[in-house]
Image (cartoon, rainbow, N blue to C red):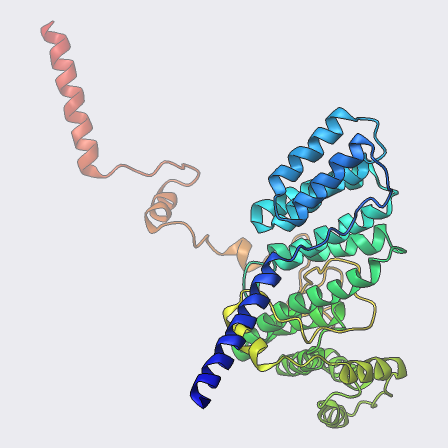
Length: 402
């Protein structure tokens, strides 16, 4: 009796699990932009039918119904809603083809109805569809860059919309991945002892993406790279260490940065109270990735954005590469730019370039040039000259015979 009871319990639990799975699969996902107006107008009836098809996953049927509405009732008050619903159907359908069609429809909607609140939502959807197609920092950055551009567009074009806070957080997450990509490249150059390249990558990244979760580590490697480049870059090295103390006061590298500054005989800056409050907020609200998240993160192509900042203003300009500090600057003096200088040759100077022969000339040309100066044609060898004379004699003999 006990065994049969256990079997029935297992069957009951399995049946309950199957019911939950099937009910979740059959549950309809409600449409976000319905028409609340209660009317039996033909265009409203068509719209409601299309929305039901969208909720049930019949996207092609829904788009045919919406196109019928727009073509038949071209003066309908629901035209904007119908056009947005077509874009939403492509967005829900998903896939690279569906998202490409959705982006085109959303762009078209914003062009036709720029003042509607739904335009901000359409721009936010464009940002999200590129965000969902983003790959890890060491892979194709196309969707990463597009997502940053489109999310920035939400904040610039629709700053007062209810979608602006969500777009700002999306932008922080996207910029975390971009900064991680630059950080990995800079760390690679640092490990390979290519210190000018490492310093250039890391300094450009830390100046632009100050909200990056590993900005303090990047500044430390940046300072080390400038130190390895020699005493001429002491100012850049101390600037990197000072930023750790001033802008990341809760970092574990603050004490080491202070020791570096003391050894360089540079004054230790005070911590910025705004930076202190922001970093404290980030530590208190950090998102820890669970065991399953770490496991599936290895298999997933999507990047990890759990360490992205949750406060602060994200940069609103695109990231641009900079010129390394070791490259000479035009117009700068040799003491501040580089050991290599460029200048004009004084008139009337007799340098080795003017007095010595050109090393690019071959020995054969040099020998020919010494025998007949001013004549660019080299002399013919004796065998070739004798052959020419024989040919001339043969031609003259043939003429005499004729």
